[in-house]
Image (cartoon, rainbow, N blue to C red; front, side):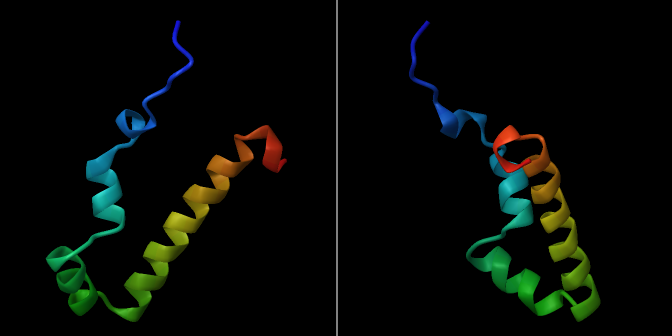
Length: 60
């Protein structure tokens, strides 16, 4: 088995672009989102990040 791992193939690009829009999608997102919705979104992303970190022994 090769030591090479194509990490770019492991990424869920659709989800990534939904969570972090770019270009015109970002402008549309930034214009329509309210303060409370933005906070909830940031909180959801942060909690997902922390949950993933707890699955990694290095961060425990």
